[in-house]
Length: 295
Image 1 (cartoon, rainbow, N blue to C red):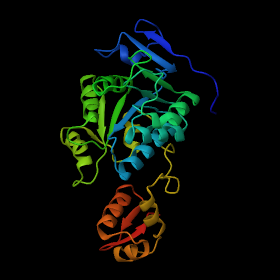
Image 2 (image 1 turned 60 degrees about the vertical axis):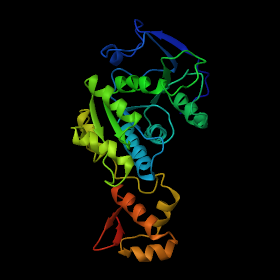
Image 3 (image 1 turned 90 degrees about the vertical axis):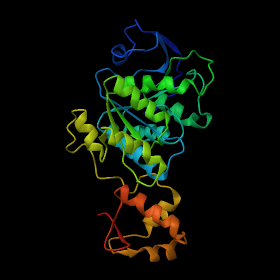
Image 4 (image 1 turned 135 degrees about the vertical axis):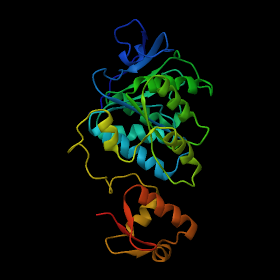
């Protein structure tokens, strides 16, 4: 249950017993951390979920879904509270019920981005934490974020990259994770999308393929039997057009032409929407250009 208490800023030196155990085993960590709320529990599993700010509907859906299912299984989700994938990862974790934690590239007294004020407050009120290596009052700077990413990966037992271009800050997180000896997973996506290229490159280089949340639970040695429910088709936060197309489908095959006529969505956009729904496991193609809802 969300509380209403005030959260003071704590300064935690690395020699303090409160300093996260996981970071003590990583090199190049801050001499002190600034904290609102609490740190992730050392005894409970953690996973970092990060990705593009300018993300697709597919990426946001999957970030929310993976975070929610891991959180339901008791995994603490770590991210950076940026718009896009990070935001959806925190929201999914909140939906799952296990506290989530945001590592900022600015002082913890400043909500950045400002539009995530409600999320910032919910993270604290549901038993999570906001942390940074930067003192209160420190404004966000672009060059703070790549260095911040080493803390995100350091706090995590594994790292999941959801959507990243070939030159992306999320890949910096993956590199930090590999240097720290952490396992890196990447979410596959459409091969013709720039947002998938970074993830596909990681997979080519040996990262794990996150084709289902159960894969991540297995890596964390969590018995996933009965942990994960079937995908929440009705409660996924779908973009408006995806919702519209999905609502037109049932267990009887519908053609692409029928869906275009029914929704008024142009042919080019319809192709992308149907692909995202397929990759999300929500629909299935039956024959050529005919689709049904997944039962």
